[in-house]
Length: 282
Image 1: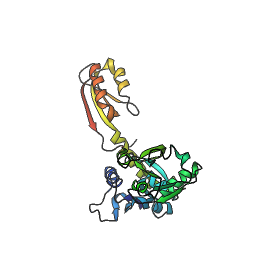
Image 2: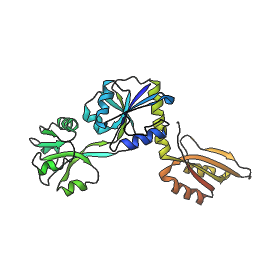
Image 3: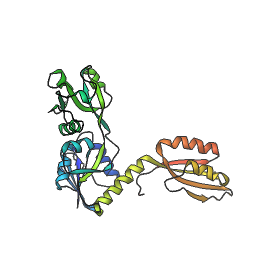
Image 4: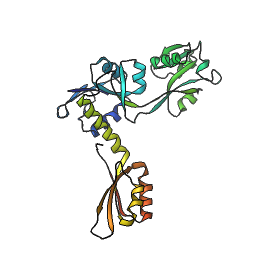
């Protein structure tokens, strides 16, 4: 069986479970379950702390896992990212009181508080900065107020929490993170079970980004219509019983669907329909 690590809580958990469900896998009904066996798909799921997943996968105890890129890099585990999943996006940055420092090159001799010491230590080393790193779990913005550190490194979304603490973002982002699928570094690429899992997850990603669009158009305007709806390979075109008209079916980006429908209508297309895509293989 394929052994997969899934986040058991936090911002990664619910989106990961929802994506696995869309990909056709059984998921737990009781959040207290730590292991779930999906015999139909020959998969065993282990629900673990997001921060521990890279360690289990890197050790080879589990085949693959879903975690955050930031957690993967901070762990230092022998694991690597193999698929971006497009949710739980975040930006990891430095922050401090105004006037303390303008960028990372001025951090020398200072103390930095963070929940991601491995990630921060590597970033400082890559930039040749000699600074101390203190690990704190959560609410690191109070470290400056309490005199534990001069600088913090943390996930920044809107920046409201930092401003409320009298802090400002300093320098460029340390990392752009999101949910990713990981595997052990150096694991073989030809594992058919892993390939099947990745195909399913990629199918969900595509299904979420596209809709199927159907419409009728006069035959002499097909080329103009197809230019608006080229599809992933090419659209399907079928003759209609009404002479001179054809039916077109094509996948289009969901975010552009309304604009494309307007353009098709102006071109003379009628009976324009869009339907969601629940799953696909490309």
